[in-house]
Length: 126
Length: 187
Image 1 (tube, rainbow over the protein chains, first blue to last red):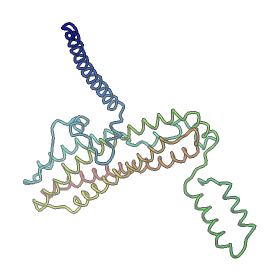
Image 2: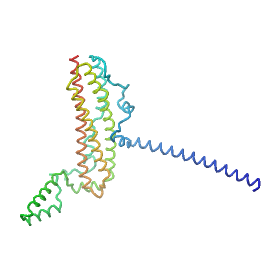
Image 3: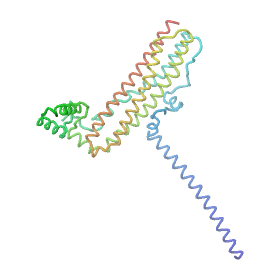
Image 4: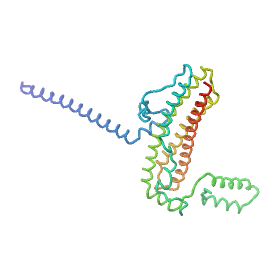
């Protein structure tokens, strides 16, 4: 093989290697973008809550705080003297959780599955 | 009465009346009994208008059910989280501290046990309800509108149970607050 031929062959190989790197990078970028998009859809569509409502799956601590607008983590101390002030503080902090529970008006409202809501004529109307 | 009279059942009954033989009497009674049992299992006959509406709006109904399913899952996750917080960060440590201070209250201990048990029931009932709803969403309402409607009725019952569970949890929380307020007089 001549000198020129050898050089051309080497150039071709260099181009091949570069293309392979570009292909790899492009594939990685596409994978990251599509995975990110699917995760956003998974979260925004609410499907994530379906999966996390399965046994053993509870919300992340930061999510409970976010929903309940809690200022700080509170855990009642298991030890120490019980005074009127301690009980008052306990009740005050407990009320924050109770209010968060009460924020859900009519959870599992029965009307959500009613004939009327689903557009099915009621059997009594016939 | 919620009852579907199937042609086969009627035929069996007619057959029973015709034969009316001693040897077959026992079997006949069993068949009659099974017939009446079937009538009382809550299987509902749907009207033609309902059937047509289900077939016609099948896709819309399913979309609505899916929305309900997602919203319920969200509610369960958050309510479950709050119940867990109330139990593990408030009720249980308070009872431990009461014992340490020799102020243990039988009412509060009972309330804690009820709360823990009801929380488990709430979680199990939700699994049961969601499974029913999932089956309902997966059903072919265009081909089997009657079966679909009967399943819907069952799921409604399970949803009612969820409402009862939530009310029970809320009443236990109120009871706990009252009991703790009652402690003030003992301090």
